[in-house]
Length: 197
Image (tube, rainbow, N blue to C red):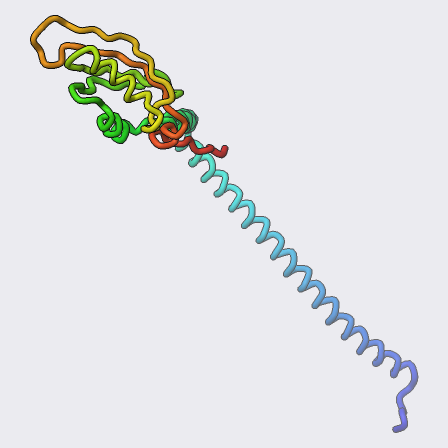
């Protein structure tokens, strides 16, 4: 194809086409920049609104917590936790008296009855009181309790035996102090669990 147009006119047409293409690119770039600016401003306004809303919600929550006295509740919770630990320690060393009384009753000699049983120390020393028909029966209580074959006590001491001069069936009373044997400690006392903190 032969170009019959004068060279200046052909150059103007070519530059016009380039200018038109360049103008379209500039308009597209400006539209994209405008869109990005709108997105940035909209995002900033949205975030600013969300920050204000969250701050108001936080202030409201803090006010509710202050009105509910959160610090006192936390201190009470810590105190209760401490009490629970103490209770666990005490329960870990509790003596199962129901089983113990039955086993002591089996080894009591004839003519005697167990009057009372109390734990004097948490390390296993027990105070026993018993009534007997005579002083020899009262002394036999200590012998029976101290017998290694029953496995209850490693040592039994007679604290007091006294007899009254009256006509009651059990006129003598005795007080004894007994120390659990190691096997009886395991049987009648709960083994403390290790508390992990």
